[in-house]
Length: 164
Ligand SMILES: CC(C)(COP(=O)(O)OP(=O)(O)OC[C@H]1O[C@@H](n2cnc3c(N)ncnc32)[C@H](O)[C@@H]1OP(=O)(O)O)[C@@H](O)C(=O)NCCC(=O)NCCS
Image 1 (tube, rainbow, N blue to C red):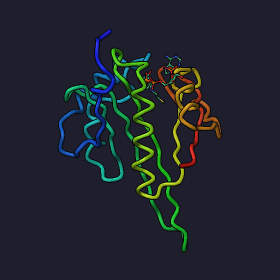
Image 2: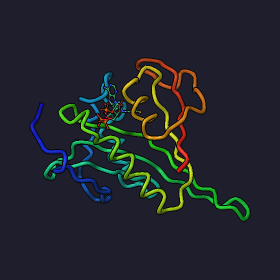
Image 3: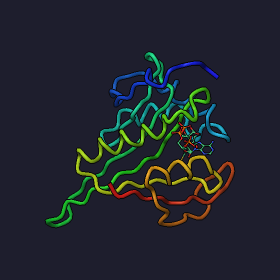
Image 4: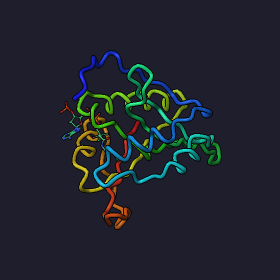
């Protein structure tokens, strides 16, 4: 395991023109038990979409983790409903269990609160115990199950929600 000081890790929102899709893919591929669920092209395309954002964790300028999410704010009569989704959360193998994912979730929530988001959702594989423990610790509650939501391997998703 790499020797580093957790205070060296910095967190920021990715700029749209930054060319990091290959790095995001490589991290995702090494970190997920079954390999990256997304291709390099999918990362590339989502970096530029206006409703989507990536929060990145860096060790001296090298991306070591990221959280991808979307924010949808839509008017409903006089009400403004605002919800967000986390669709990607990855920490590189050499950097796991240092609190980086917890910190990225905290940072993402801060950004969302500033934009008046009130509810945050995500899906997770039922077998992904590390992520489920992490999300519970970060204030998420289970609100449903999506049958056969994932492929390769086929598996149900638990839907989790956090009120901001
Ligand atoms: C899940 C993942 C993002 C966690 O990242 P991380 O930076 O290692 O997590 P943290 O260090 O912030 O962990 C916070 C808490 O989550 C829980 N946790 C995280 N990893 C765990 C593990 N492998 N086993 C048990 N609990 C775990 C613990 O409660 C931990 O607190 P502790 O270390 O004080 O016990 C990382 O393992 C990963 O990238 N996995 C592959 C991709 C993935 O599954 N993403 C989620 C998709 S929905």
